[in-house]
Each structure stands twice: as structure tokens, then as C-alpha cells.
Image 1 (cartoon, rainbow, N blue to C red):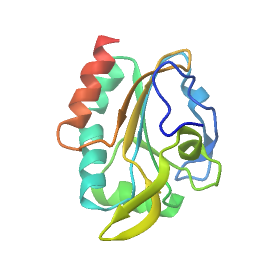
Image 2 (cartoon, one colour):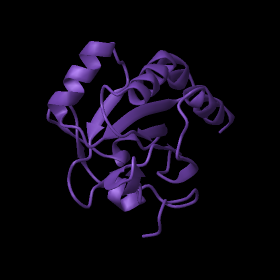
Image 3 (cartoon, rainbow, N blue to C red):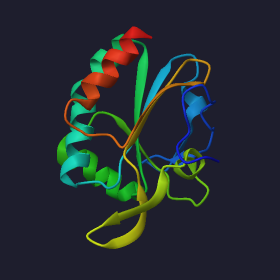
Image 4 (cartoon, one colour):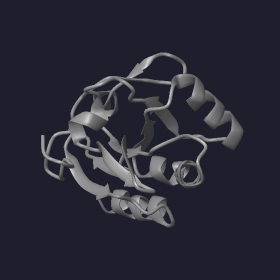
Length: 157
């Protein structure tokens, strides 16, 4: 698959684990819109801000017929702690399996920081329509104002 899946493609339907140990996959949200935001790591400044921003706008997303799902490679237990520590209201999922959703989308990728090369999550957001098609993609997201920008796109859909 190419680096970064683009709008117009179907959202791959790969199962992930929720903090309570149950399974979730994109097709569970069919019939309504879905925003999936992928972030590198729980409890880091940018990821915390992003999750809090989406949580703050959850009611507005709901009014627009859209669910929100945050995804990282962190364990379900780390997600539980992240949710509790920051009073998050958005659903989170763990995409820890090799060949998971982030791999299929091309956003689990080689990154460089401070002269070191490593594999990591490229902060990305996908807007998926009621039929499971990706209608908009934000890659290499900057957190400030992002949740509001995504909400505007959801409301325009």
C-alpha cells in the first residue's frame, strides 16, 4: 500500500482492542460518519491536547451524526489511565498488532527525531462516510485548532 491512504479509498476494516478488552473496527460505525484520529502516544503534550480537544467537541460531532475514535499503539491499560487522568469522553482503541489499521493506512512509518530513526505513528485523521469510504484525510496533523477544523468538515459533509 502507498504511504498514506487517500480520500476516495475504502477504510480498511481491521479490528482493534478497546480499553475494556472488547473489539472495535471501522465497520461498527457504518450508517453514520466516523472520525478516526491516530496519535503517537498517550499522556504526551500534543496527544493529550488533541484528545482533550476532540472530547470537548464530542457533543457537536454527535449532533452532526459523527462518532470519534482515537487510536494509538498504547495498551488498553494505558488508554484506561489516559482516559481517567484527563476525563476524556472520546472512544480510544489500541492498534498494537503488526499489520493493523495504522499499517494498512501507511501511517505506522519511519520517523526521525534528534538524529535517531524509529518506527512511529504519523499523527493523522480520517473522516469516513456512512458507507465506509474515506472522504477526507489530514496527514502530519498540527494539533492546535485541528479538532475544530475536522468538525467543520464533518458538518459540511
